[in-house]
Image (tube, rainbow, N blue to C red):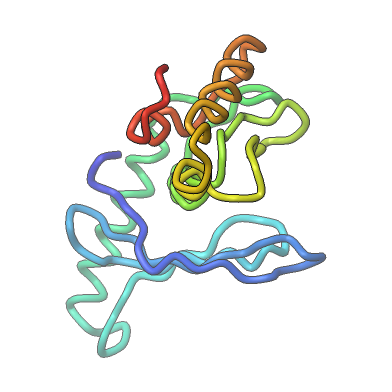
Length: 171
């Protein structure tokens, strides 16, 4: 959904150390709702935004847009996972947006490789970020290129290809 994005995304420690989050949903250029994950299991919580309470016309408009967004998400194709096929919904769409935000946050740390052990990714690289590695060592870019090439040889799914290309890695 190209007209959907998250802003003000923050994580917090939730139940048993799992990460929860808070974020605002912008749909078609309008901040319409807040989404919250308590990290206690279950679905995300959505609240349409209102400045003057539930009788506020803005709340009613935001609620309509949120309901439309939820309906649109349910019409998206089913999602293939390692556990089988899932019906799509807004939680899955929001989860994918959060993954994209987290990848963006980590992309400079090293070559991001889709994990074969869990549902996330692993950072393959050094104790320094990619920009620092390139700046600090004359062969830094060559070392990153070597990591990328080795991961491709192993048929790994690289998650930050676009960023790697911008720093000079040949894909």
